[in-house]
Amino acid sequence: QARVRPLLLSAVLSANCVMLPTSCWHWLLGSTRGSAVGSGAKKAASNKRAGPLALLGAAALLLRRGSTGMSFTNIASVLVRNGKAAELGLTKSELLKNYAGAYTTARTVDRRSIFEFSMHCTRLYDTATAVWTRQLEEAGSDAAAAKICAGARSFLSTQGAAGLKPLLRQEISTALESFGNLDELSEYQVTVFFTVDTVGPHTPEERGFDVYTYVQPMPPTAAMVDVQAHRADRDNPTIKDMQWIRAREGLEVLQKEAGVNEVLMFDKDGKVTEGLQTNFFAVAADGTLLTAPDDLILAGTVRKVVLEAAAKDGIAVRLESPNIRDLEQWESCFICSTSRLVKPISCVEVPELKAKKSFPIANSVAHRVEALVLEAFRHNAEPL
Image 1 (tube, helix red, strand yellow):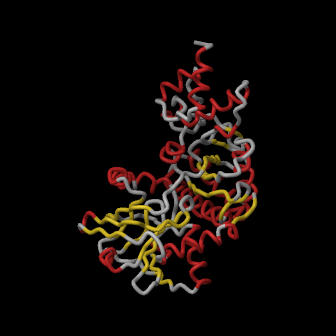
Image 2: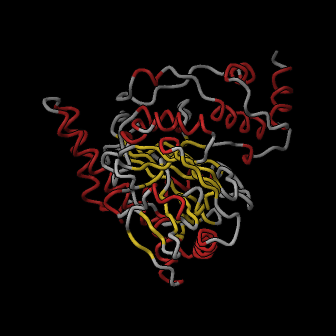
Image 3: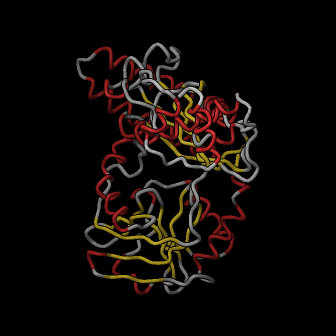
C-alpha cells in the first residue's frame, strides 16, 4: 500500500478526479482525524475528517515535495485562521453554517487587488458589531461569554472599518501565497469570516475574535442564467450574518431542484427584493433600471458599481422594487454579485403564478450594463 498510494494519488490528480468519495481520499492520503477548531468551538466540529477539497490541497502539497513537478496551483482551496494556514477539516459551508459571526465574500482583480475592498471592510465592521451586540445581550448571566463579546466589539470600535484593512490585507495575502505562483489566468474568490464562537488559545488576545479566510479559484458561470422567483421574506436584510445562511436553506433546496442559478424573493405584494446571493435589477419597457431600495436589501459591491455606471452612461434608475406581476413588461433583467459581476437573465419562472418569460440573448439593456460594469471593474479595485 505504501508504494501504491503515491502512484494512484498522482494519477488521480493528473486526471483532475477531485470528486472522489471522501473515504477514497482518506485511503489515498492515509489521513487521520482533524484537530479541533478551538476550545470554544462546538464539539461536533472537533472530530470531523477533512473534506475532499481540504484533502486535495494536502495532496497537492505532498506531490509538490515529491518528484512529480506539480505545484501549488493544484490546491483547490485554502483556509487561513488568524494569519496562519489551517488544517481544520472544515469546508466553507460548514464554517459559515456552524458558527455565528460576520462574513463577506470578495474577489481578486489581477490576483493582487480586491474589488471594492473598502466596502467589504465596512460590511464586516457593521455586521460584526451588530452580531456581537446581539450575542452580548443574549449572554445574560454568562460572564465569560459576555466578556468575550464585549472585548471583540471593543476592538472593532477602536479600529473602525478603515482600521480593519491592515488585518484583512495580511489574512488574504497569506491565503493567496499558499497557491504559490498565482495562475495568471485565474481570479480568486475570498471569503472572510469573523467569529467569537471558536475563541481559544490560538486567538490573538488583543483582538478577542478569530478571523477565518477561505480562498478558492473563482467558480465559472454561464454567459446568461436562469432564475426562479418565490414568495419569501428576509429578516434584517442589511446584515450579512450566519442567521441568513440558515434561513435560506429551504429556498436553496428549491433552487437545486429547479437547476437554476439563483432564486429571487418577492413579498406578499409581488415586490422583488433580491436573490439569495445576489442583487436584482429589472429593466422597464422604457429602459429604466428598477431595483429595491437600500433599506430592503443587502446592498452589494457590484450593485454599487451598476448604479455608478448607469448614472455615468445616462441610464435612468429608480430605487423601486420591481413587481413580479409585471414580468411580461420587462425589457430584460439581471442579477449581480461578487462572483458573477453582472449576469443577464435568460429566463424567469414564477411557479406560484404559473408565469415564465425568456429574454433576448444579446443587445438588451442588461447586456449593455454588463459591458459597462466590466469596463469599470478594475477601477474599483484596491491593492493588497
